[in-house]
Image (cartoon, rainbow, N blue to C red):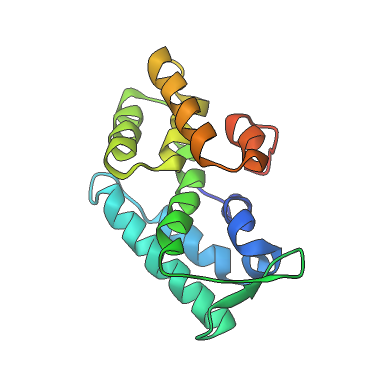
Length: 164
């Protein structure tokens, strides 16, 4: 089961504390994650549903301007192109909650390969040492180091931030 706190922690870097703590924002995402059944729908369908949930959650709270406040006092406008990255970030608490098994490894690995999901890569990196070949672990490290801002790297590669 995915908690609201875990969803908030996953979405806070993108949306800021004020938005993710707003009543119902993280809960709507948590409900979408909790209703996922990998035997009935593909992860790609869940990702599209999360994009819709996130769009609606932001729209309801900030209106058609889709501009929300950040902790540093600045504001950010949600672009349609941001929704897929935000949906992927929202998936990490779900992926991280799965017990490592061959089935969950295969599902995450296939999703990583098909969608380029950073959340699937992170779950594989952190939780699936027994299944993940060393060469792929090194490949994940390289992809992440080349694509994420340096400020996110330490928390991405470890569990130092226990709120995740």
